[in-house]
Image 1: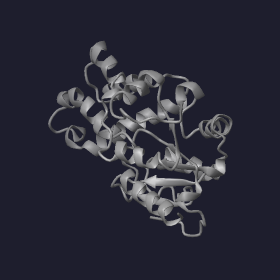
Image 2 (image 1 turned 45 degrees about the vertical axis):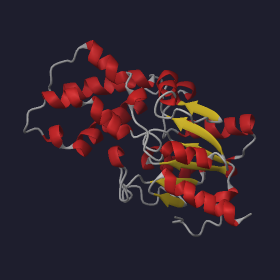
Image 3 (image 1 turned 135 degrees about the horizontal axis):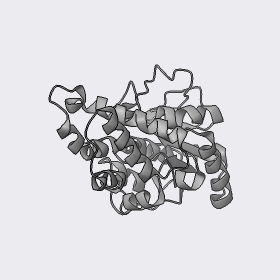
Image 4 (image 1 turned 180 degrees about the horizontal axis):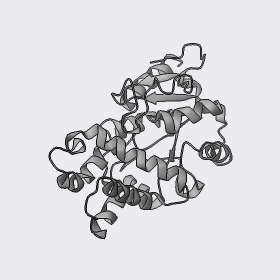
Amino acid sequence: MKVRTEDAKDLSDFKLLSFDCFGTLVDWESGIYHELQLLRGRLPASHPLKSDRALLIQRFNEIEIGLCASQPGLQYSSLLAETYLRLVEELSLPAPPQSEVDALGASVGRWPAFPDTVEALHRLQKHYKLVILSNIDHKSFQATLGGALAGVTFDAIYIAEDIGSYKPDLENFHYLFEHVKKELGVEKEKILHTAHGLRSDHVPAKELGLSSTWIARGDRDGDGGEGTTLEAVQGKVAFTWQFDSLGEMAENVEGDFGGKK
């Protein structure tokens, strides 16, 4: 639904949707929680992270966010592995075998898409160009394209490995603007950024005057594993639309375009 009614634009006024991938299209929280099962098995029964899914994911993501900021040139699979090692150390657990660390670093391709994602992308592709803007590396994203997002074609894919930084760095968004204009002929004003992440996507979108849609994914008050609440970013985000799922967005897009025929 439209939550910023002072914005006169309609969904049909845009030509391109840029997507955050993990958290918006792919359920990274379920994926990483599954990958942490060996770690959870080593925790004592009394440890709060053994049974608190949200808290474990939040702590993992807090460590990852710090690494994204401090080591922007580190390939995501290596960053993921390093996050795991730092969490293990923080929890005073025995060092895991290298094979376990490598498996977690290479786990992105095993993370599942949200149930509505693939169908919704096919519906949205009838009306927009689709572009990925993600904190990921080539090898990991190729695994996702062959797995969770199999059958989906994107018009362009812009990732941290090529850009040299991780969102919310503004450089990632400038890279998007420059490349979609040059490669797809689309100006910034015709881009609708579609994302779950408040801190990683919607804060920089507001700063740069980029129109955006929040895909809440059932998280009406906060930002899941990011640990960012709507209250914490009040005044720093300005998404015009909010939908619980990408499927709900697709329904509204079809209604908007259909109403203008």
